[in-house]
Amino acid sequence: MFAKTADELREMIRLNPGASPSTFLMDDSFAAWCYDNRDPLWLKAAFNRDADLNDCRNWGISASEWKTNVEMAGLALAGK
Image (cartoon, rainbow, N blue to C red; front, side, top):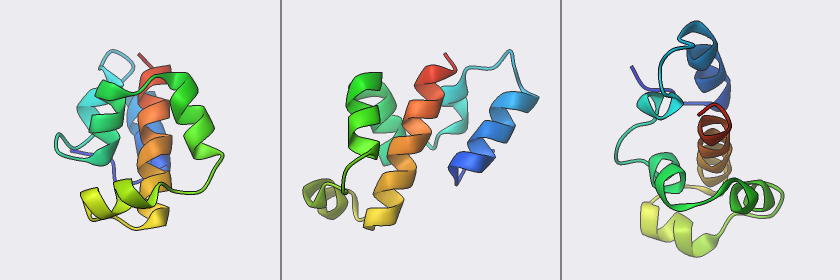
């Protein structure tokens, strides 16, 4: 099962403390890509600014989905 929101990811991490948080990110999602390719500082800075419209266009996601994916990647990295 994959998380669709940051709240779902938090709950999955809480309920499965021995599992890698990245297992709850969809493999082909922007969140998974960020988890694999961005560091926590970049994710924190990105979360605190507007969505990158190029990323939105390239990934076919909305600005709010971009923000959610960035937050989820940050949560997964923090829970490593």
